[in-house]
Length: 141
Image (cartoon, rainbow, N blue to C red):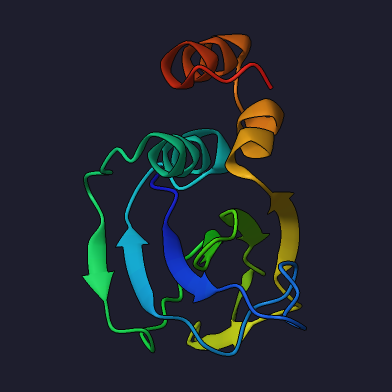
């Protein structure tokens, strides 16, 4: 079973919380598998820190919605500001008990992470991920 996710890019703005879905995004990608924080989250962090590309992303229109997502990631950036990442666990889908037609999501998406890429690596990565990051970025913290 695939762990599907969307990766959205938003501008850091005063008054906009990293722990809430922003009103506007600039670009959106769909990721069909390995969308969990220990997979995609680490890939995004290393990409931001090392400017490495990530393969397997499918660009989408910013208004495209999916009923099969498990995670939504936001990459928050702006000129002369550090890049932050937010991860939301998507609320479960709801289906009609009689006809099994999709009726939307029940509940709210839950923000499970807000922080810098280095903090994501510390939270979701292994000691090997942290060592690899430090060796390849010359960063001790």
